[in-house]
Length: 261
Image (cartoon, rainbow, N blue to C red):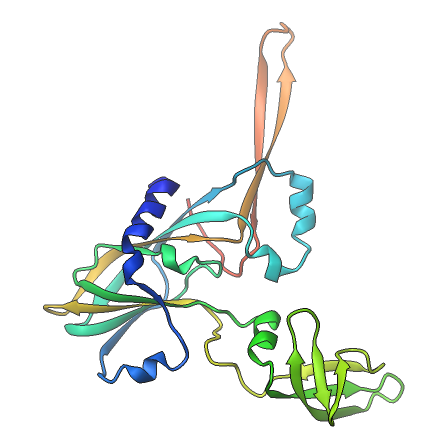
């Protein structure tokens, strides 16, 4: 397992090749390229780091808080083993099933038998916060339920602010969400461009011939944390003790790592 500083150094070396996909970027790429998709890794190794001691009780309490904030805490090195099909000529390989807290510009690929031309990350996930921020100025549906009669009413509304509290424009008037005295919920008519259910890393390649290869994909990810507690039992001689350690692992992201060493 490589140390953290080695992964960061490697990521820095690849930095000139990293780009973040922007809306409309795909439309500007005229040539149609062969695509291959890697949906999930065959094997994953995880190393969770921390820069200061973590109290287990506080860690458990934080697990009950908002996921949208906690997914940015902690730091881990994820090393995946994948089998990919490399297209001949210029092609695109899309990596799915990544950790939700991936730091996209840290991704490093080893063992790819092709020239890496470009690396893009489409990693903005569908969350309530992202939906609101990406829908400011657009029309949505607000469903209001009368607490007395139980009747529902659906009205069109324009989201005018969403980051520090939802402000809606309904019928030419501005109001904050949940201030009407009725039970309210927002229904989004469509998913904003650039948001997805899972993060995706795509690389543009150029290969002399097509082939199937086993590669290593390593990247940093947030949303993982750990704490340690110890119990010491002093022996009768007063000179030695038995030390028992307990490690608590916390995963605030939306990705599980089954059987990961």
